[in-house]
Amino acid sequence: MLAGLAGAVIAFAPLPVRVAPPTQRTFRVEASQFAYSPAVLMVDPGDTVTIELVSTDVVHGLYVDGYGVSVTADPGQTARLTFTADRSGSFRFRCNVTCGALHPFMIGKLQVGSITLLWRAIGLTVLAALVAIILFPLPANVKAA
Amino acid sequence: MRSELTRFPIVKSLLKNRWLQLLVFFVILAGFLFAILSGFAGTPVGNNNFSIVFVWIAWWAILILIAVPFFGRGWCAVCPIPLPGEWLQRGAVLEPPARKPHWLDLRWPNRLRNIWLQNLTFTLVALFSSVILTTPKVTAVVLAAMLFLAAGMSIVFERRTFCRYLCPVGGFIGLYAQVAPLELRVKDKRACAACKDKPCYNGSQVGYGCPWDVFPGGLTKNTYCGLCMECLRTCPYDNIAINTRPFAADLAKPSTRMDETFKAFIMLGAAMIYAGVLIGPWGALKLAAYSVGTVAWLGYAAAFLSLIFGILPAFFTLGVKIAQRFSRSSAPQHLVAKFATSLVPLGLMFWITFSLSFVLTNASYILIALSDPFGWGWDLFGTAGVAWQPYLTALLVPVQALTLVGGLLWSARTAQKVGAEVKASPIPVIVFCTLATLAMLGLLL
Image (cartoon, rainbow over all chains, first blue to last red; front, side):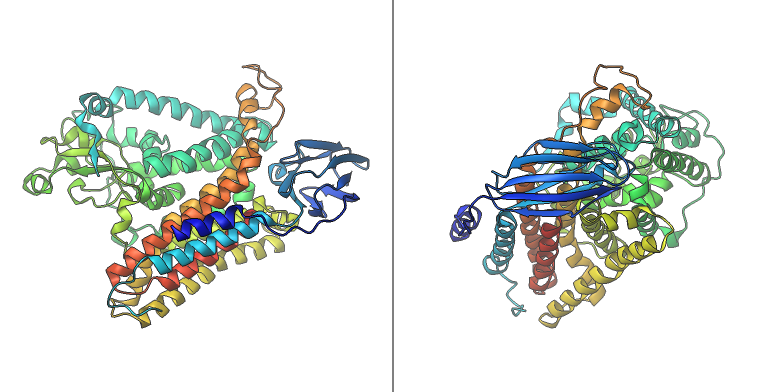
């Protein structure tokens, strides 16, 4: 019961949020087989994000999971994608134009706000381990390690 | 908690029916051969080629998300790879023929009657997986090689030697089949002990001896039963049952075999490496894994092998040694093997979370490849022009997090049960599983 309550608190309790005024953020992202550079973009919730996608070899795309927005860049050309980062969390972005063998695995990461979900997941993991250790009895003839 | 499905005449009749099984075999064998053909003849672009899309997205999703967790070796029951060889070996497609063909029919060497070779073949496939998963011709070569190797082994050795001792997929299916809520067991072991001819193992006029070289009367876990249903057909005492049961019932009987222990390490480590290399944002890692033969690939291979054969086993053994200090327990090797049982649910959950990532984001390629399997511009079912679209990505991360936490709880509970049996503290093993889960969370989220 207590463990369930603790789990619910870890999973759903509001965490302190650093409130920053929304701002305009522009990233120049180079795409080449099969990586983005930079591969991790970090913004605050509410920011207006512009990604300037530059392809250095073949045609590449950039699709942002969770936002459903995308852009395509021809080799040597710069393509722009602008959207408002109004959902917090960690989102993968990935190439949506077949670009070669490892195309399905050409992936980057957009971090909007703090990595709340990861912290919650870590909290639940540690809680699960503690529950297993504390609540499940040890064999009677075994000392606690 | 067990419920016999074969008590229903319709279920039993369907499971014993060779024609129905043959129909399923033909459909899947046709798909398998088509995958080889499209791999060789179709476009080299993996995500537009039937071989890559149907083997590594559709089949893999069905295998790891449904077949293994719910049906154990259910896939082995319909796998097309051993079929041509088995038909040759038997000299028949359906019932046993009046005269058996004269093949060598050798026994597999005693020293190799374990899954070390399967550990090796899986590791080899895993080392080259970035190429195999993405290059249609290489996938076709691998599939064809498995088909020919299985056929070759069937005419040299008895039974399904390839499936039992060499198949790279069969090893981990067997490991994780232990969690499935389905089993084939005998109803009354005394009937088996009293049975003189043992037709379930030796065969009879109505069916073949167990292709998996298993005596059903001695079955205590799912690992090596291929669910081929031959014993259901041959048992003269109606003593074979297919049962539903609680999940992970087999884990109550921890293994003492080091080959199975290392299978658990290999699978756990491979899932973590794939999560980092394929799903992570590190392009240099992807290129290293893909550039076979280069210095970067050698570094990747060395890191891969170090993790699965060195780092994970070393830390796990250290944990077990700590546990052993506080116990009056059996031999250390058996303790490591028994506690490694707790890695089975953890590893399965790791594979499920990893697979969800790429299956949900690439599933839309299935519709495209269905209409245009060779990538030649066909549009057989009007779905060739469907735009690529990832599915359920908003749900993906929370589901992955909960699956991993659930896997940890499951493995911790398993470790507790093993600890109670071997009279040793499971805490170090739980700590190991927790650290592995945290690492996987960091890689996936």
